[in-house]
Length: 245
Image (cartoon, rainbow, N blue to C red):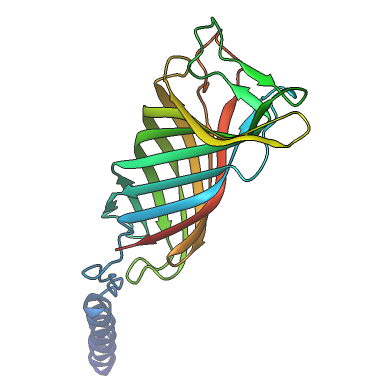
């Protein structure tokens, strides 16, 4: 009888211990991951870019000289991923301009010729400086990463593309000189035409930086000049981006 009572007591004690362990397991609640407050998130809606512009694939006869520039302004809408607020997609409209400088070169943007001519005039009378300026209405699309999306002050990275439509192309020629470099006539001549140029373009883009300042690079994937009408040059640009809002 004592053995039976002892056996029952041991069984009850073991059951009690098991029940306590089970209770402990049941009341353990997994900790929730801390969410990021994006109510005051800096979305980098407004982008200003200023950089150096150049052409790849240009022949040696093109006397590009001086500091060719690129200047772009965009207003973009940014949409963070619900599953990961560090990632977002952004797109929006903007204006992009390139200013390519030439030395002692005739840029025949308005010539009635079958091809777009770039003629070296260093051995004859010439304009001291010629600028070929283009302006595009663009729609950039970016895939973005932000290390600190709540404040926008951390490391940032963005890759994407830009789709553009040509809205203006012109040359600006200044100071007519002799081949020796003496001034013959100090005046400015402007000519405008889009005939030789492709009306649309596609660029690959990337930028990285910290906070509101970043370095950007862009490369045009499509030809700048229409096929068969001139050299197969492709514009590129490297510079700084200031973002905010």
